[in-house]
Length: 365
Image (tube, rainbow, N blue to C red; front, side, top):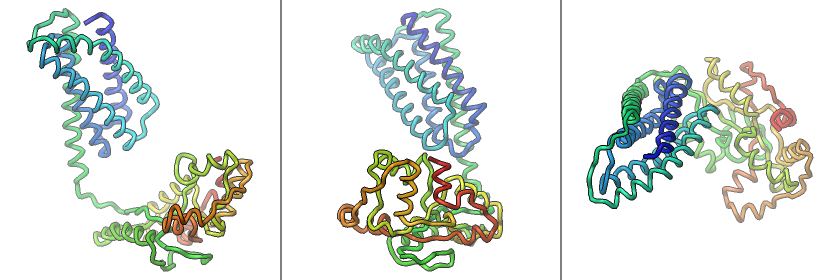
């Protein structure tokens, strides 16, 4: 154990303590968020690993099989950390300071491994034995760090258990907003579709109907259920538009097939506002079309996007090629569409900030 290694371990302890206290406890309050059960479980396992490692570094020198166990614990910590990174990205949006702290901790942990692993491998080649090591006040500091890591590990175990119980509580919501899609209406030509329209049988209708049917059971328990039939959501952080930007920026964009198929769209912030409007207005129930009041054809959509990006849009995508590559999937989702109108939203007082596609593109691009 060199002075440099002890320095890196001290840095890891300090950053870990800061991350736990400032981020997990004070700002993010993970112990009170039911969505973070899995993250807390991963944190508890990692904290117990750290507690073991700190005690070993402070007090003993493991040889043989015992050194191999410590190497395995170090490897397992890497796996747990990678799983934690994935879980965090799936379940919450990390603040910038936490993401930076995690990055620095990962780099520092790599430096610790670079210094510690050669010694552990050397010890692993020796006969199995556990020898006491005297590191003076550093052993005391390592013990205190181990106690802290173990206590927070227990805290995370009990917090995850409590959150699991809270998640199972039979609390009936006042409203259930079911995220469906305009694909429920099936394939149509130019006919305007309001919430009272019937459906044509196809794959997208079957999928959306099954999804809405799963939510319909809540009505029997007195819950107001809204089937939010969402169109193409326009935003630069995801969805269809992000896949179109790259070819259009290079001047390679163009209409899909004939370009006459309808595209019913909604700007992302308008969608969020509509969801809040639906929740706040108790009279709104059943199917609600989440689309802007003025749908456009694919040709018009393409022209507006090209205008906003100051690029040509002359490379038409042949429908025969799309059908050959995508089969029925392409025919249903790319070459056909629905002309959907948000009658219920408008009649219940909702005001769209972006009624036209030009307004939406000017706001987000």
